[in-house]
Image 1: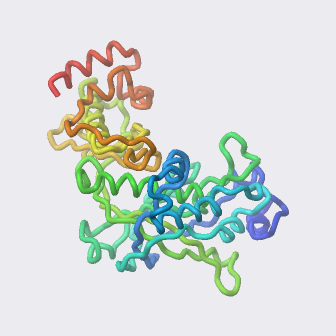
Image 2: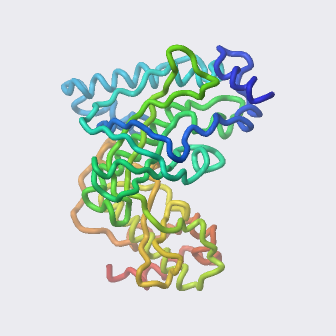
Length: 360
């Protein structure tokens, strides 16, 4: 199937429908590019609305008395969780256009930003997902660094096919909303405690109207609402881009120690990151023996923000020890990618925790 025919299929109401082959071979044209301008409007981040967060919304003690919360929950129930036509009976562009935008409270801040660098292809991974770009133009509005990172959650940059059922389409609107609302909630919980150390400094959630490509246009022009999170750009190297074979055993374990200290600090401030992986750890220098080595944790779209969950009980104020949080729990992706010795079992891991964090 040609790209032009596939584009037409995505605009039509059903034929040909999305198939696994189509979803894997087609992406919309890259909608973001260097020197492009985006007109942003800052919004209050909506509450996360999927999975464990939906349970918390439904059981919120103020769901009836808080008018705004009740209105939001009613919208979520009607437009995000009601029984609806299977997604594979709709085309993806059509589904995106027919899905009402998530209600947001707009703040007064607006900004026109210019993209100066696109850090990766659509989604940054082969499977799609949020896209990170660097931009100019936010500093005068929010402060921070001259160059700001925007993490864009555009529905049409997310994977089209179900991972374990590739003949069916995913709810790309839900995936984009979930990434934006969960990560924003995590940053809001953490930013005033550790923003700028251990994690990037957060500059809020923004929204903009993104036109569909010219080949999809009609009159009036079709647009989609897109969320974007603004944060300071963390300079450095993602740990997954480094080869552990180039480092000594102590150097590898030094970066592991710094990483679990950062994850412990995040957990202390009531967020479970839930994805300790080399791809989510940024090292300030490639010299892992350097005294200047600093580690930042990124990507909170799988996080659990504990105060937003059912049954939350405020913790004791004392800082937990990495030994306590990681006891008998080897970070398997860190081990699988060579940063923790492959032959270590839980006993050897616990011995290392005792040696490095027993006094903490």
